[in-house]
Image 1 (cartoon, rainbow, N blue to C red):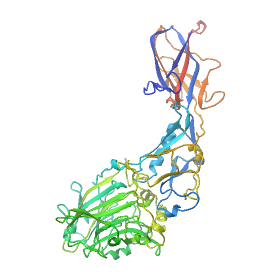
Image 2: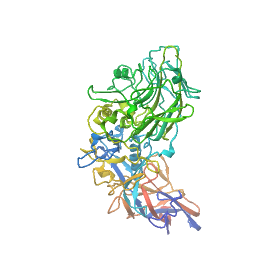
Image 3: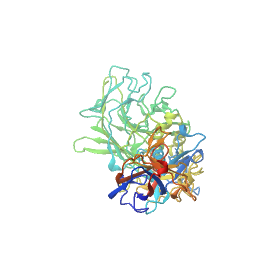
Length: 627
């Protein structure tokens, strides 16, 4: 008879072996320096076990929901700013999806729970520079063993990570009148992805606009830009004297009841003020109207009529414009060849390139000047609000009856490297896009109808932020966690995840670290261990059958769910009576290593184990009376 002590590492908290998969706490191998002899007809039993059980997080309706927020931090004492003073709205995070919520509970290991929360936060943050950049992981002490709660990391796709957008797919952006249901163009235009040239079709109805949106990638809001040729080698719209627009817009998967791709609360009847004729929806736009004038506009709230509508930007009064003169600028006399939008945090600037000899420079049409005067609402773009976080290029070309086949060319757009961005899938694009799919855009309407986005509303101008720090992250806006119902960060109905995430307060708005933003739990949430584990001896021939799986098994012992004091943490097991398993070896065995693992009843590894695991094996020759 003899004891064999097996362990994955020398003590809890050590790390010299943790990089190797053969020393995991749930599966490890001990190699011997000399051969160990096991006699013929031997048996093995587990004498004792010591493990560290991480425990499990239980999730149900009672702790499934919280909210996150990205925008200007609100004052919890009720003073300004409050939610109505911002262009933002709390974003719901459900740990369990609707299809998973029932009367029962679900259990997660710490790592699985952290990964689930991080994934659900990334799915529902919607800002293009934050998508896929939120992660959650268990927070541990210096030894890496004791569980302290969770670490939430809210990072961003920084400006240095901006990449050129693919821009290979164009879809009709005006209406679904063609009835094809695929949004692949009504025949009013063609797009050549190789040259990125968008051209009006001369053979069809000249009264409808030729309008297309490019939905594959959103504009980066950290020094992202869109550049479009309006005249030159591969574009001739401006030189031909026809009306055209270069815009930015959210994406519409559903048309409204009249068949147009625009919000149900948008009124296009005001578009005539710009002398553009029929035109597709755009959140921001610049171009040439039917009289050769430079026009610039945004879609914003009209409280008098209870709709959003196009409001002209009086760029000629903007403090930074190069197109002064007291009214719309006449484009017919200049060699203007390109349009460029640049987004920085909440701000948006638009410029035209003057190709005239001796000039050869970008000229500002309008940009945010930072002035707090109310009149500036009409001279510059409103902030890039939450309903249009994901902006896509829109090209539109008109006709003057003679020049019927004019073109624009997309040069480039800088986009964040989002994985699996898809405007047609829930939680894979912007806030508007997801709510448009769900037909719940009333929350977007709530944001867009706020006074700060109404150019005619009284009150000080909303102070937009363009703050980007040295590492290329937006620094003027804040990540906030809303873990219980809040009258400040409202609506946050049903938020109930504070305890399960380990925080003392209902609102978590002060990070433990910045650049990127990190939040650390204040305490370790309660854990349970509800699954019994089994010990396996993986490199012997014991005869064991797992009836659940219907297969032969290497299991040699069943461990209870808890010891005499607790169900998680450091647990010790020593059976009152050892159960011996025949090794079924008619000859002596020379052993050079022992392979030990822990599993559940379905034979999957018990990966809730951490730190040091010890298994003491007891070998003996089978008693004669049992032979």
